[in-house]
Image (tube, rainbow, N blue to C red; front, side, top):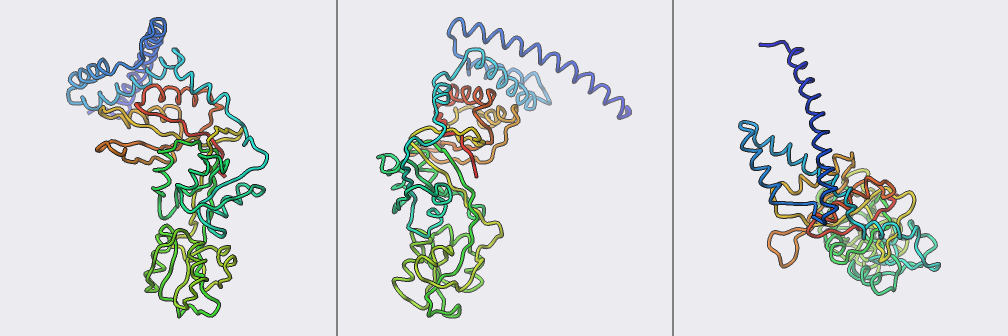
Length: 375
C-alpha cells in the first residue's frame, strides 16, 4: 500500500488537471452562449442534457451515479454562464431597476390581522410607528385590503421559532404574489391573562390563537389545562374580559392584558426561551431599500430528476445562504408543488441579479417576491 503522502500528491496533480479542464470547458460554454445569442436559441436543451448525463452514468462504471452528479453541476454552471452572455431576464432587470426605495404615499395605512393588543398589531406599530393601522378579521382580509388599496401595506406573521410556519399565510403569499418589502423578528413572551377577581388556582381553561397554544404546549399540559382556539391572542384576551368567567384565562401579550383590563396571573409561558415570530410586510408595489439583505422567491420545478438539487447548486456556487424553503401543493394538480424560498442577498449585487434572471428563464413558474431588510 502506498504512503498517504504519495496518494495525496497524485490527488493534487489530478486536481490541477481538473481545474485546467474545467476552465477549458467553461470557455467552450462561452462560445456556445455566443452562438445561441446570435441565433436566438434557448439556453436550456433538456433532451441533450439528459442524453449526456445518461452516457456519463454508463461510462462512470462503479462511480456512475457520482459522475452523473458531477456533470449535472457542470451543466448548471455552464447554463448560468450562457444566460449571462445572452442577457436573460430583461423584464426582471427592468422591474428591479425601477423599484421604489420607500413607500410612495405620505399618509401611510398599514393593515394587520387581529385587534389592538395582538402581536401583529405590535409588529405593525414597531415597523411603522407613525402610520395609521387598520384591523382585519383574517389573514385573507389583510391581503384584500392591500389589493383594493384600503391599505398600502400589510403586516403578517409567517413563522415562529417554536411552532413553525403559518401555512395559511404562505398559501396567500403564493396566491396573490404581492411583494415582500420588509420583515421583523419580534420576540414573543406569552402571559396568562385573567379577570382581576381570578387567581391562578381558578384557571382550568385557556383561550388563544392555535400558534400561541402550540408555543405553550408544555405549560398547558403540565398545569392540566383545557384549551380552545381563538382568532388571535388579543381576541382571546378581549373575550375573557367580556365573558367574565373566573376559570378562563387568555394566553396573550402584556399589551393585550393591559388593553382589555385583565391581570397577569403568570408570565413566560412559552416552552422555549427566545421564542420569536417573524413578520413580513406585503405591498402591491416593489420597494427595495439600500440596506435590503433578504430575498424571497416563488417557483415551481421542472419534472426532471434532481431538479431541486440542481437549483440549490446555483445558490451554493455563489456562496448564498438559504434561510427558508417551504413547499405548498398546487391546487388542482396532484403531487405538484410551488416552492417559497428565502435567502440572504441583495439585488445591488450583479451576481444575485444574474442568478434571479437565470432562474426566471428556466423555472416553469417563477416570481421574484422582493428584496428587503429584515429587522
